[in-house]
Structure formats: C-alpha cells, structure tokens
Image 1 (cartoon, rainbow, N blue to C red):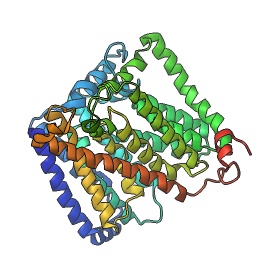
Image 2 (cartoon, rainbow, N blue to C red):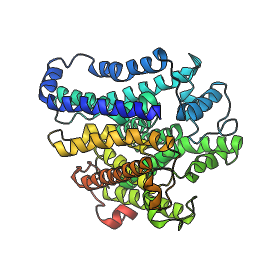
Image 3 (tube, rainbow, N blue to C red):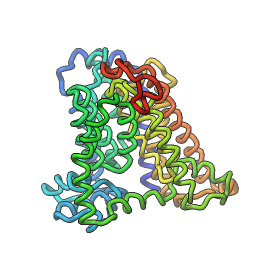
Image 4 (cartoon, one colour):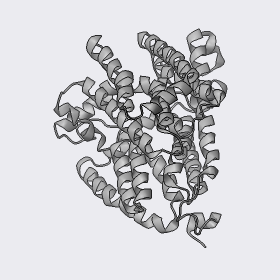
Length: 437
C-alpha cells in the first residue's frame, strides 16, 4: 500500500498547489505574458517531470513497475534486438510501439530510460498543443494552461510514476488532423492516422471512425487510400510473420475485468447474472461504443478537424472507459491535455475544481484497486470492508466523471464552425451517411 499512500500524498499536494495557481491566476498570467519569450514549457517540464523522475528513480533508487516492467520493457527490449513483436514477445499494443520505444534503449538499456522517453513525448505533445491551439488567448494565458496541465495529478502520476503512453495518441492524432486540415490533404492525413494506429494501441481506431464519418464525402476516398497505403503492407507483413497473433494478443486484454466501468459498478446489484468474462455483453457494449462514436462523427460532419478533435477524444474515450469491461481510470490521461487547452474555463470555479477532483481520484484509483486485490463485487455485503467501500465510492465518482466529459464533448460539437469544404453541401442526415445531395 506504500505506492497508494505516495500517490495520494502527491495528488493532495498537487491539488493544494493548483488551488494556489487559481488564486493567483491573473498575476501569474500577467507575469508569464511579460516574460513570454522565456522557454516556460521546457522549464515546467524540468520542474514537474524531469526532477521528480531523477528524485524517484535515480536518487531514491526505486525501479519502474506496472506496465513499464511487465509490458513496455520486454516489448521494447525484444524490438531492440530486432525481434518480431507478437511472435517473439507478448504484445497487447500496436506493431510499431515496441520499435519506437526501443530507440532510447540503444543509448542506455534500462527500464528508467523508457520513463524518461515517455515524459519527452508528453513534453512534445504539450508544446505542439500550445502551438496549434492559439485561439484568441494571449501567450500568458496559454502558458498558464501549460502550467496548470503539468500540475494536474493524472498527468503527473501517470507520466512520472507509471510511464504511461496514452498522451502519444493525442500527439499523433493532432499532428495527423493538422496536416490534413492545413495542407488540405486527406491522403496524408490518412497516412498519419495509420501511423498513429500502428504506433500506439488498438483503441486509436475509436478516433479514426468518427474522423472518417465527419470528413466531407469527397475527402473520404483519399483518406481511406492514405490509411491503406501504410496499413495494408504492415498487416500483410504481420500476417506473414505472426499469423493472427497481432489480432489475438490485443484482443486478449479485453478478457480481463477491470475497474471502473459499467460492470464493476453494477455487479453488486446484478450479482452473478453476467459471467465474469462478460459473455455476449462484452460485444454488446463494444457495439454501443461504436454506435456512440459513429453518431459523434455524423454529428460533426463538415466541422473543422482541429477544433473537433478534442471533443472526439472526450466522447470516444469517456464512453469507452465506461462501456468496456477492461477499462481503467488511466484512460483519463488520454483527454486531460485537450480538455485543459480547449475546454477549461478558469473563471468557472465549479467545473475547474471538478476537473481537479476527477484528476485526483483517477490518479489514485488504479493502484488502490490493484493493492486491495482487484475486487470483483458480487453483493453489497462485501462493503463491510472499509477499503472495499472506499474503492467502490471512488469508482462511482469516476464513472460519473467519464460520462460527464463524454456528454460535454458530444454537446459541444454543434459549437464548432464548419470547414470551408463542409459548409458547401451534404448537410442532410442522409447526405452525411451516404453522400446524397
């Protein structure tokens, strides 16, 4: 339970620090604006990521655990030796994942190198987001958003202590839609989206589906061509070398019942009505997830890509976390960065403090759930144990939070302006689906 106490203490400390930031927000923003040529994002990264990593893993001597120890390092080390993922090492991630992650291991073959590499990816994601989402805000206001993000519990805990890769999905998706929109090239957008899918994990497809559906009809064919240009040769190579392992191993992860999600919060009520492996309900919930993200894409038809992407992230991964039985609260890390830069109104104390509270619970919950034995509640009598009751209460709050952010994203789509191509034609429902005029 030591790691739970550490993450709790860190999260509480960060929440207090965030309260100070909000209290002095105007003064800090003005100071950042006056000195906006200072490399603030690099400084924030050094203070809130690099120094904590040095303290944790190099001074205190702790070793990375969890996904870094059991998944990332074995996969990356196999790739470093030019092995074939899936065939030579179990890999629930996409085929390129281990190969790009192996690059720093050629410099220093140590698990801690992977954690440092993940923080650099996060720094790049923050910088690219800062550059692309300029809006009407001053440099000082956007730099305050960067400081606020680096101070949130979920990014801090997931990046520093867990070395999670989730923010890479945002980075790769953002670069893809930016190239697609700014260069007016759906083909290259498709190539980069395929690269994102092949470089991260299978849930990236939950972004590709709504992006395809929201694309103006004349852009759909070149988008698919771009996806196929990179995707099909890779799939052919994988089938040649691994058979169907590249499909089976990622799907294996869906068999595990984790928390928080609909199964974990409803099981005390429904008892043993649903088998632990989910049975047919696992596929029913997958279908519902696909319907939700598809309706999101249809609703966003013709909208500006870069402006809509944060909302798609919220809907896709908020609903996915609730509906998939193997989902965990780590997935909050997928959308915190776009939420902070595009949807957070610091003048609204309620929504800002809800974001902070949601972050604190999501940062603590995975380790708490794991350390108390990954409980699968079959009745309310199990809550006689205080730690079970506490964990279940956190699950309820997190599920409510994920649903709230998914609904927030879906509702905000109507406020996004149409792109030049999307404003011309095919705004009818049938047109959005079938290209009918």
